[in-house]
Image (cartoon, helix red, strand yellow):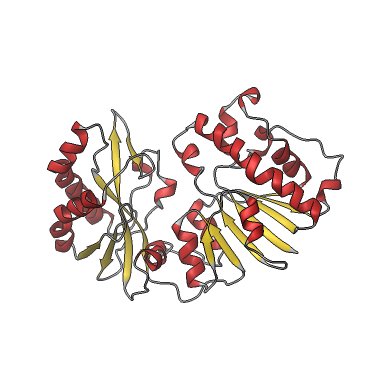
Length: 342
C-alpha cells in the first residue's frame, strides 16, 4: 500500500489567535491528530523542511541553493554557475518597520516585470550581477563569485519587518548599499508611479536569497511528487522523479498513484494566511482541507488505500498508520493543543 507524506505549512499555527468557537468544525482532522503519533521538530522554516525531505541540507555559511533549483523549472535547463533569487517585492514602511510583501499580495504583468528589470539592469551589472526574468515574480541574478553573505528565504520574511532578516556575513555592507540603490531607482520609476496611481502596490525593492549552484545529488526516495509550488518541482526534477501539479483533492492523488508508491504532496498555498495574519482566509482554508483532504484521508486509511499517512508542518510530524483509528481512547483535543512548538 502507498505511503503519503502531506507537507502543509501553516496548518495549525493560526488557531492560536482564534477562539475555539471561531475555528470551523474539522472532525476528520481532529480524529487524525488524536490518533497520530506526534513528534515536535526544531522550527526550520519552509525551504529547509522541504529541502530536507529530499536529503538536501544547508551547508554552514551558505544558503540552500533554491535559485539554481527553481531555475531548473523556470528556464527548463540546468546551467553551471552561481545563481541567486532576486524577487520583486513591495516594502511597506511605517514609523518603525519595513514590512516585506511578496507576490501573493500584488499582481505584476509580464511587460511591467521586464520594464522594471531593465531599469535596474545596469545597476546590477556594475555590481557584477547578470539579471534574468524567466518568470514574472521569480527573478534571478548570476554571480561571478560567491557573494560573502547568507540570506533568508522569502517565505520566512513575508509579512514581517525585514530588519531582522537582512543578509549577514562579511559582505553584508556591500549588499545593503546595493539594495538601497535598487530601492532608490525603483522609487523613481515612472512605472511604479503609474501603479500607485491606479491603486496597485509599487515594486520598490528586490529580495536576494537562495544563492548557490545546482546540487549534485538529492534523494530519490519519492515515487511521485505533487506540489503547488516550484521548489518541490525543481527538487523532483533534480531527483529524476515524476511530479505533477497539486490536484484539488486527495482523490486526484490516489487516482494518479499506485500501490507501494512513496508519495509526497506539498500544500503551500495556505501559508500566506499565517504570514499575513489572515485569519478569515485561514478559516476558509482549513474548511477546504477538511472537506477535500482530511475526510477522504480517513476513508483511505480505513479502506487500506494508505499504509501510512504523515502530516508534516515546519515544526511537527504526525504519523498515522492504517490501524491508528482504533486508538479510540485518545481524546480529541482542540486545534490549539497542537500548536505548541510551532
